[in-house]
Image (cartoon, rainbow, N blue to C red; front, side, top):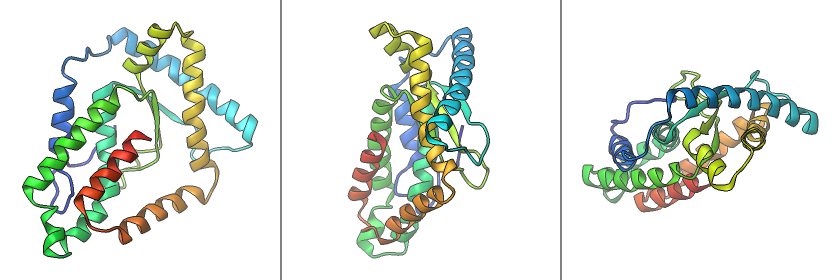
Length: 223
């Protein structure tokens, strides 16, 4: 999992509050059985490897970072990973707010940050029940902990049972979708840095309005 300290001056969201709220909303969700989780991990490791071969054959792209890392997680784990990524993306904007006008700095007040944390936590808890897989391209704090293909095990199992999907085929379909994203960012030499550069530029020119930031975060989480 990607991790980062959640308490940090100059942050637009109280990330510790966001994670705590999300996990409180997920407390009724039963954790994956140990044996089921192990089976899912093995299946998705195989599906991810197969998906890489399919995507390479169809597109000609090969990852410059070697084989994909497949991680099966639960909804709480997905929340933690996304909080770390959002925190990294929004940190430069928080630094701008901290040195901006008095109005801008109000977005960093404890009350404002806590309120944003509650809203983000509710949003991520809701999203965690709908995501099947996600490619995380962001290393956090230079740790290299990134470039991971996540699969949210409970959601995969729920859809398989509800619709009678054949597990092997359905899991491969999810893997192909996520591996395609990974190949785009790790198989095209300039694309990842270009994308992150655009994000950084967008943050540098963004209007330092906490409400706008929160709405943008909500849109990002839903895509």
